[in-house]
Image (tube, rainbow, N blue to C red):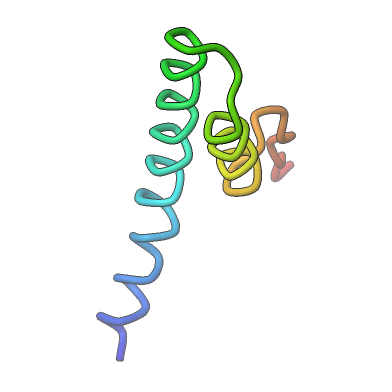
Length: 61
């Protein structure tokens, strides 16, 4: 039971930010080659949905 929770935490803490960064990088490289397209805009929107670039960091004190 606890291994499942650790795996879920690992996915949320590591894989999701990496996927957002990869989608953002792919979007920028596509736009540099071909200009703005529907695919590049979709990748940027997906990356923003997963992890907004201007998200405020929470302070704990």
